[in-house]
Amino acid sequence: MASSFEKIELGYQLPEVVRKVNQDVIDRFAVGSFDYNPLHLDPEWKEKMNLPGGKSTIAHGQMTMSFMASVLTDWAYSLGGKLTRIDAKYIKPVLPGDVVTAGGTVTAKHFHGEGKNFVVIEIFAQNQNKEKVAVGEADVVVP
Amino acid sequence: MKYQHLDKYVTTAKQRGFERNFFLDAEKYEVWEEVKIGEEYEASRKFEVKAEDIKAFSAAVMDTNPLFNDEEYAKKSPWGGLIAHPLFFTAIGFYCTSTGHSSWIRTPGAYNPGQKNLIFEPFRVGDIITLKLKSTDKWIKRGKHYLQFQQDFIDQHGTLKVRRWPTLIVPPTRAEMRKFTAAGLEK
Image (cartoon, rainbow over all chains, first blue to last red; front, top):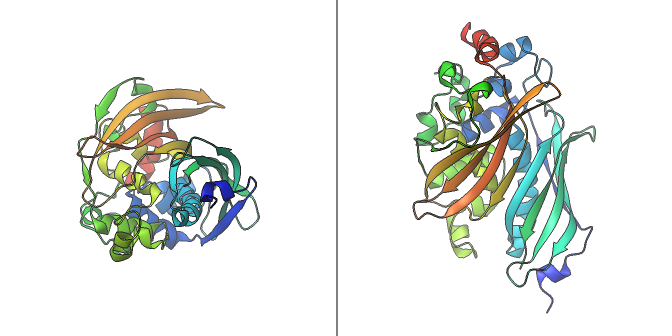
């Protein structure tokens, strides 16, 4: 019987994850991550500063990455797989009111033997205007 | 307590005792011009992982995967128990670094252009994590000042669970940083 790894085809698109972001969501992430940078929490302060996102607070980059990680774990952990690397670059701030869709595509398969075989997945997150807010790459070991 | 309206999201002992005002000790944070590349050190605070920490982080990232939320389900899974969402290292990293080395990650006005993360083992209940840090790079590009550190998350048995390289764009000097902190302290 073919293993999960053998069955995966290059170009396979992982099921997407959609998250609505508002200030409450950002606030809750600040508490959960212990990251209370005013950039995310303090609209009055942010308005005075010349920082990304203009006058608005912005979501934590780590929150955007967490959405991309959830795409990987939703898919891989049900197969008995394991996320071993995740890299990301943030392109555009996520603002309160944005709807973020995260997804990924299998771009490579690495044949290292049973229990070590892994796939490379190009990951992304985009807003409701289909503008990329983050891109990256991940490795997932698949049995 | 700053940001009192966030109290409704507090569910753990660590969250209850954590200082939320990043302006308060800003004068003690390292700034770009003071960081020396190659220095290694250990964060003074450790992170003992409890089930409530794992569940609180899952709620914060809106991930309902039962492996990250349901002890009974996770116990019967191939993982053998509750594991943390992969980005849980974010919470450990901020919790363990307050002042001193690597405190620049709290700098008001700093922002995150991207990062690299290697995950060797998931965090589990009972882990006592020590955070080891090493300054690995600082550079200027298109007028912005970047800082990068290596963070190693090591459990009480010496197992390296995560190695990552967070990068931030930060104010380059203490004088520049004060422009960001002054506006916050005025309030």
